Length: 188
Image (cartoon, rainbow, N blue to C red):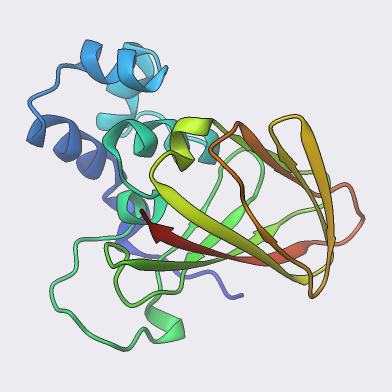
């Protein structure tokens, strides 16, 4: 998956601040709803911190949005086609987790996301990130250990897992090669 510079990475501070302000929330209220400190939210909004995937998952859950809807630039048109070279790509600064928003509209009823998880990486998301979603994970290459609450699912290329009720989750790659998988998300 080639990495491209996208507006999603550049506009993240404005997106987070815009979502917060559109709800009339103070920094303190977003902090309370997301479990992210006021200081960190302030740094993100000022562009002084590069948030991790886990932190963005907490913020998107508080907003009641998918992570893709938070990361993607606002859609100027309702195009039915999403060209590979124009799909928003975001990289977690800590783990190297690479996320490509495949769907033509990140705010549509179906959200397709391609992820490359580097060897040794582990990304955790709180249950709040999944409270309003139905998800399936399809492993395309490599091996994925998916922790769903107290259960761990070991997935190989071709395996597909339907997530159960919202639970704290983590994606882990314990192998020596990258793991590439597709996440299909439907809003409930």
